[in-house]
Image (cartoon, rainbow, N blue to C red; front, side):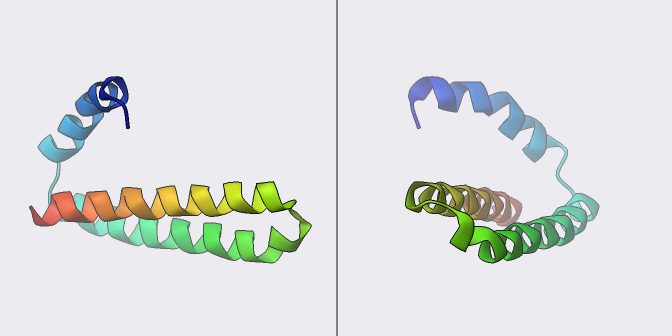
Amino acid sequence: MTARQHTASAPACDFILKHWNAEVTRALDERSRITLEIIRNTAQRVMDRFSPVDQIRAMVLIARAEAGLRWLGDRRHA
């Protein structure tokens, strides 16, 4: 991530951390888990239709989603 990207995302991060509470955590955890499960299941079903490049792109998108969820989880426990 470049310094500019980090700076651009800081207001969103600040907003998330400012408004974080137990209710938000439960809602995000459940919704995020379901969303990630849908993404993974869909990717598995259609992966054989993708070109090798598109397979890599799909895996990168899944990895980004997982990383974002880990970031949220880490912030919640901080």
